Length: 413
Image (cartoon, rainbow, N blue to C red; front, side):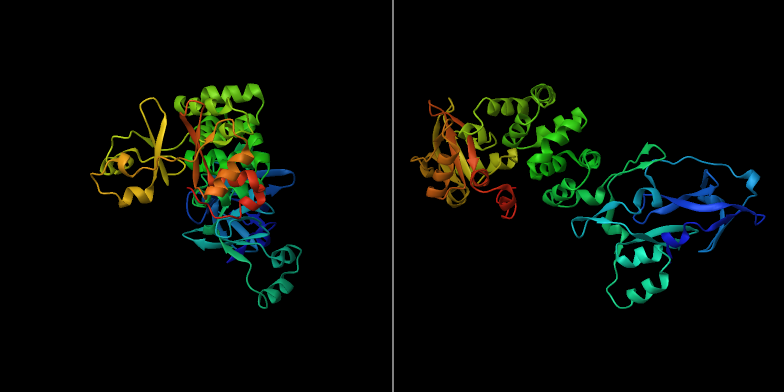
């Protein structure tokens, strides 16, 4: 096993045992679970040479021997998915995907494998700092008394970086496996550039869910800095009410540009929500809900739900509307399950509806949800047409500050 801090500065000699310089960095490829060395950076005076790893004949902690004489050494260039361990990782923050947090890299552990070196661990402890200060013996004694501070490389992931002026193409496969709320917490701690890089690397739906979970302070800045096409895709995959709130926080010209780049249906829904005052029921409702005609049977509804695979914010309630969009009734998922397959919706739907008008205040909405213990409340206009619904988590947003709301279990997902 090797620690990177002990390797840096070692002598690099050519095939004639003549000094070429000192080891300044090691380049690895991120294509494997444990990155393997592909190149080494040799420093000679002010000059730095990037040499392919294939030139290495012998690699030890004290000296690296090359296969060719110095005059025959040919330099190379970094490739995609490669990083400089000292330049891009050491002393930088990376993501601990098991601990769901950012960590600072104090040292890296490497091991031999198939003629190369593999990165296998990340040292985040104080012992690594002492090792780098030349206090290796003290660090070794401390490591026997305290729990190890090494993390398995497969549980961490670089955020982003620059290598020889080339943007790293990091896929963030491990990061994408985290819950969006965890990714959002991590993204909130990153620099603006790193935050954009992470969100642009995620799948569209994961990125949208992550933006929804981010602190509002960062959302608008993120989309303002992001590639417009990716930003529009993220907005199209967000819940319409969240997308509308975000666009309302952007400069008017930027918001209009993003809105015109969104998918047509989603843009139409968001545009409708933006037409309402922000502090009214219309301003906080979502247009993602399940509405059905009254003539269906329970079996028809179940088949339709399977066919639609609804992206509605909740299917706890399903709303019955006539052909003109007037709200006629509502039934719960429990009502649907208990009904016989041939029973008409009209026979088990609730006709005495609790609803709010589009111009109702947010306080009124919160009071209705709390008083009647609702998971969602329908929002109607002056003609009794269903315009949207407000879910209990959106009502909680009105009552509780964000930091308290994030501690509550997610009701809808």
